[in-house]
Length: 467
Image 1 (cartoon, helix red, strand yellow):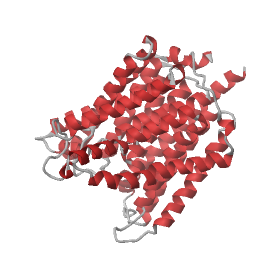
Image 2 (image 1 turned 30 degrees about the horizontal axis):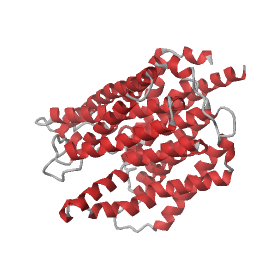
Image 3 (image 1 turned 180 degrees about the vertical axis):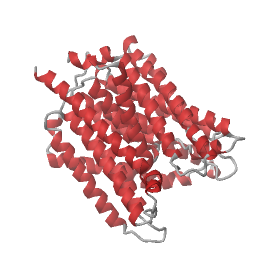
């Protein structure tokens, strides 16, 4: 595996950075929310694993930790925070808000990704209690900062939003402090480095990325209008570069030990497909449908016991808990790691697509038809994951499946906009490119780049493993 350490400093910056740029752009276009943020989490974890030459069994778990860590930050609302950037009187408050939220996103995401990178060195109970402390910190941050709006980065007057950055900050700190007193010094050094560079690059990425919104507010008459996407691309690029830099700094320690017992052979194909279907159904439909209505009715207006119960259930419908469940499953049964890291990440993109295909609010789309389409398409991806998990060059195959399945969904969404909602209305070719196709040109360009580099880097590792 010696040659895998010779990737240049710039490769460690640019490959994860561009992978996350692509993932973040796709997330904002077809995913949204914490489940959509699983896309950049999976892509950056795969990119780092490929550069470090990790074995497939090890990589599969790293991807799930990346999904859980980066997805966590998607709980934060920031639409109104970005709205402050369009007003000269509030631009600095908006910039502070985006910087804080980006930093919190990178802090938690970096720490959890790093936990995945050393998961084989630490007891399972340590991973378990790391997430327990994360959830406890999450609840405290909600009650101390977000619920009382002690520091509030959304609009307090016009449709105020429930913020969660304080909860995520407290949760990340609780997890890191617990690991400080639990891990060996060298292992904690890896956690701290990823968390620190995630904090810095996330804050820088979102803080600087938000300035595209400021520029857009001053250039309202220009043809170009994709300022929001430029913000997402900048955020993804810089956060991915920061995490890539942390990987480069720790490359010798990480490459030295990346064995994970692989029990993939213990599952038959039909078992794998049934289990990922049940997990997807539970996380995306059954569990939220069961608990969210209960949480909505358990408020302090009905008594303090009711309010406390509502707070507890609120933690269980937060993505932090879902990420906890994903990690627990793969730590104790890594046969499902690729399915959770790739298929579960993809599943939400097709769910979101089906929601967006409604051209008008009053047009009825049969819910059973939506469910059938989501199930069929998700099972196709699950089958591909199961098929290529048994072949050579697995890490590259999983990157290809993830990149092209999500990119295809983005283009299907484009075609639906063009033909259903009438966006194909520009007779001027320049307007068509700049207003409608710019984002998708970026998607296809960087998808090709990530796909090509993934194949190149993975092939080198495959040749070395044979020798």
